[in-house]
Length: 95
Ligand SMILES: [Zn+2]
Image (tube, rainbow, N blue to C red):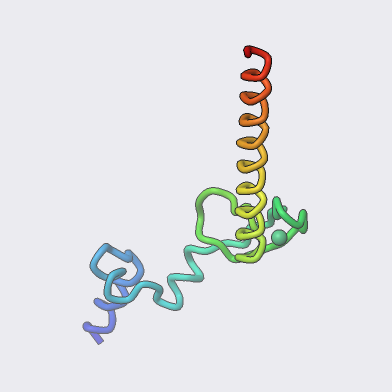
């Protein structure tokens, strides 16, 4: 009886050591997550997900997250190409 109470206390407060041993006690998850409704910046869908408190999520899924990374990469490559072309044009103008 007494022991049961003790283990419960540890989980509820979720101190560092308790978390390392047992990262997500079932009922602690219920306490610390909340429903967050946000719009995915990739597919523009409005989704509601169980999330831990923190910055608002941007992606509805890992698929959208990697999709966005691909787009960012393409954007970066495009800008580099434009810069190179501008430099080349500048050089042509100079000579
Ligand atoms: Zn999405």
